[in-house]
Length: 194
Image (cartoon, rainbow, N blue to C red; front, side):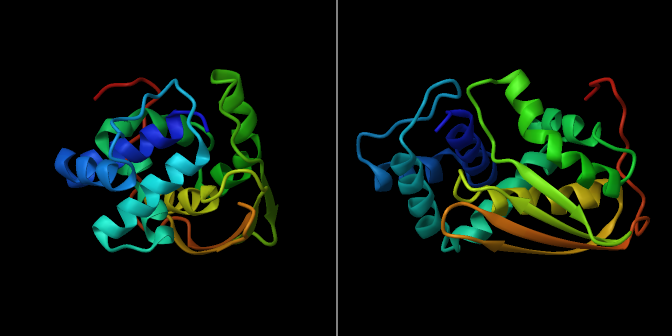
C-alpha cells in the first residue's frame, strides 16, 4: 500500500487525538512500530493492524473510524489542499459527484504509484446518485463516504447517504440530494490563501 494512505491515518489520529494516542496505537499494533512515511510502501496487513488498534483505542467501529478519516481529509485546516482540489471539481455538489469518475486518473497523474479504486457514478434522477467503488482497497468506500459528507457541507448541500461495503473492498454509496442550497457554502477561491 502506498504510504500516503497510512500516513493519512497517522495524521488523522495525531491531529484528532494527540501523539500519545498514536504512540499507544503503534505499540499495540507492533512494538517495533514507529511512524509511517508518505513515500514508502507498506504491507496491507501492517495498515490493517494499525486500524484495528485504533478502533480498540477509541472504542469505535472500523466503519466509523474510516468515515471520520474521510471527513478529516476535507474539514481539517491542515488538509486544506485536499479540499481545494476536490472543490475545484464542480460548481455544485451534483457536479462534484459526477466528476468522481475521473478521480482515480487525476490522482494517478500526480502520484503514479498511488492507484485509487475506480468510482462509477450513476445519476438515477436529478437528486439521486449511486456510486460504485470498484474492488481494490478495503475501506476506501467508507473513507469516500466521509469525504462526501464533508464536501456536501462544504457546498452547503443537505444530503442523505449510505454505504454498503463488500468483502473485496468494493462498495456502493447511495446519495440523495435533499436540498442543494440548504446552507451557505464555505468560501472557495482558486488561490491557496490560508
